Image (cartoon, rainbow, N blue to C red; front, side):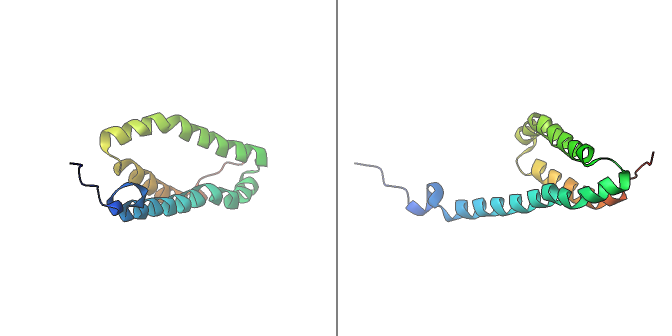
Length: 111
């Protein structure tokens, strides 16, 4: 006698709960990356004008920041494993929220 089949709605990508979770994650990632990454294109001209740095230096600093984020990925992965999947992304989002409004207040030095 064969085992009863699992209900189709509770298995695989067809699960309503899994579809909702995937859609929620996609939406939050879109907004987070849109604000934190593409927002830089909005403030970069002001940073260039305020500091007098060439655009290449400002873009290079941004790229360096992305490199540092990539190098930090193993540490973040370890934190995810040890502390749980909710704490690390939530902390990163909160840090982004707190840091973004502070960007215009960052002190600049003139040569």
